[in-house]
Amino acid sequence: MRKIPSFPDRLTADVEGDIEDIDGILVLTRIRVRYRVKVPKDQRAAAERALATHENKCPAATSVKRGIALEWKADIEEI
Figure 1: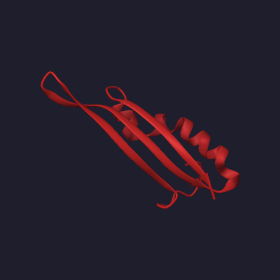
Figure 2: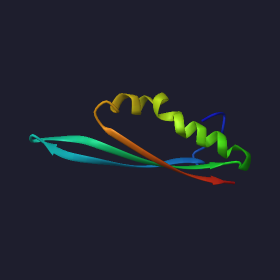
Figure 3: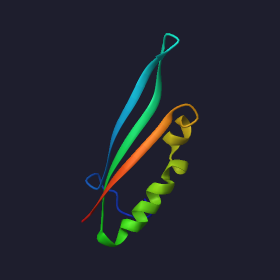
Figure 4: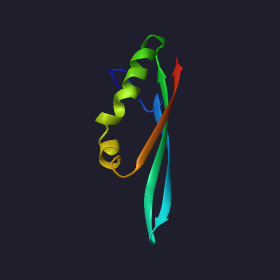
C-alpha cells in the first residue's frame, strides 16, 4: 500500500458477507470490509489515498464487483 509497511500487525481486515436465497439458489449478494491500518504518523495521507483507489486494483474486488455489492471502511491508527 503506497510503500507503507503492511506487516500482519499493521494491516488486518474484518469481512462480512450476505447470502440470500434467490430463486432457490444461495447467492452471495454483498460484501462488507473494515480495514484496520496502522501507519507512521507522517503516512496517514498516503494511506487514505491508497484506500480511496484500492478497489480498482484489487483482484478480488474486480472479480466480484460486477455481481456483488462491495462496501468497505477503514480505521487508521497513527503509531
